[in-house]
Amino acid sequence: MKLDRLIAAYQAMGRQAAHQAIAAKRVHVNGLIVTDSHHPVDRFTQVGLDDTLIQQPERALYLMLHKPVGILSATKDAQHPTVIDLIDDPDKHTLHIAGRLDRSTSGMVLLTNDGRWSKQVMAAEHKVPKVYHVETADPIAADAVEAFARGFYFHTEDITTLPAKLVILTKHTARLTLHEGRYHQVKRMFHRIKNRVVSLHRESIGSITLPPDLLPGQWRPLGPPEIQTATLRA
Image 1 (cartoon, rainbow, N blue to C red):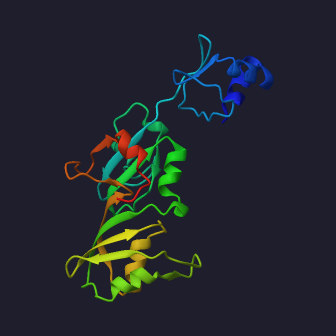
Image 2: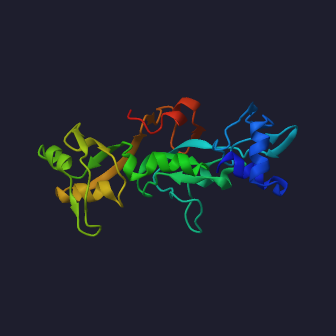
Image 3: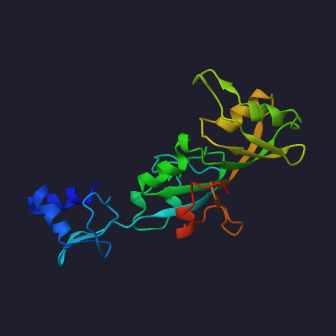
């Protein structure tokens, strides 16, 4: 929303009066005078007119959770425990998940109530890298590296996966970097090379890496640098 629209709606003062108030330096945003009528504001922005607070900002939440196996990536479920159930915060009901994981997959999950931020992090067109540690039932063939780099055609969606970076660590383990998040994508990709994923763990999203001291089931707020650089490559 633009600042002038928010001011205009206050006591139905109208757009012209709003422009005049902004130009007269009567409007402050997050404590600072703003004279640009098109200045963007959202529900997390504090806006005042003279000495009157027009909009009290909502509390923005940006959290990192180490999801254990068996926990559902959902906000609520009648049968299974969810990632929200692990969060101890009075405003957890406002959260949504930025990057779901299968119930059988562990690792980093990001939660927020800022929809614009989560879209930047998870939208396919932004190609934010997600890194996974994979364990397979059978040895990983050396030519799998090239196959993942080429991409795989999924006939159900009629798409070819973006090039992915596969680094073989041991006979049965690898580190995989994706830039998208298709349905069961990792498992389906390994199925194409006639192998089966037995363990899957997400290590990072963009520049945010799951710290070793954050144990399964634990969570913490993201720091300002993590929030600001979440869409960058690690």
